Length: 231
Length: 113
Image (cartoon, rainbow over all chains, first blue to last red; front, side, top):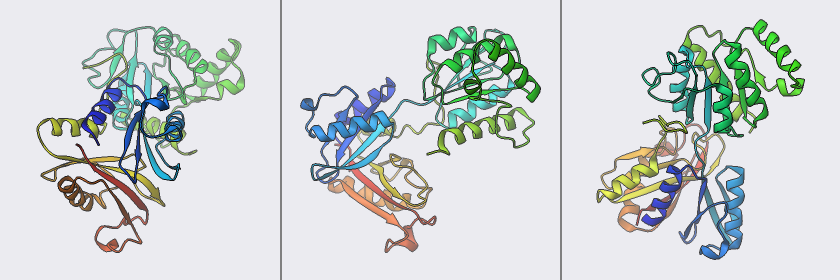
């Protein structure tokens, strides 16, 4: 690999721009491919460029045969994002676990006593109302959103934005009773049963978790199951 | 330290480490999992960077074949030519460096030029 190619990959990763490295395994020829790369600008052929762009869309590294040679497409996607609403004790544990699992974590809480950098050295802390922050940061299909405040005036606006997003996981802390009451309020606000079924609550796999760390494990396990178990 | 998009902890940063090593004048090879069969422990795209002293970051298996990959990487650093390595239960070296889990992996090794 030429150093210039390595530098370009690292720059794209740092800018969180999805990028693929296409390598012809027989010859070692390589090209850096973006979603909008034109085939005339790289030396690996139109079929290879198109295969690399398909892999970028699929968000999946893959080996393919093109034009009589073997092409390996290595997709480098930005980290998945986890939005945690509520800078509470469980969030402090969840931030660390999510970081280990490769997520970029954003903790959202307008209450300044909770949302401090000292309490969250490993996450970006956003001191805004959850719905406003989520609308600004635009969760996508590679995002997970978890509400942890126990306070309906913080959790519910966040869930309303979450349900309108493509987030692959939406979780809400709270007992079964809390969940039922919340679902009724959201249903009255116009959300369908199908939409509300996207909310995982009580949040996390039922492993009997009690402490903040254990609850964070249960949540992280459920998110991982939703992300991976189907594929 | 924080940015508006969040920060990463625990991520591998293999490529970033390769750049740092290479910038310090070390010769560096990259190993990338390009194909897996069966229950191989690390997915396609997993990477490991090796310097000319045999230090490495990242992983291409659950620790089963890293030693052999590092040895082959030192050779690629000397020779310069990229190479495909195959490891698996059917490998003749199975008892030494095969994957105990029964999976198989193909690994592409290349030198940073």
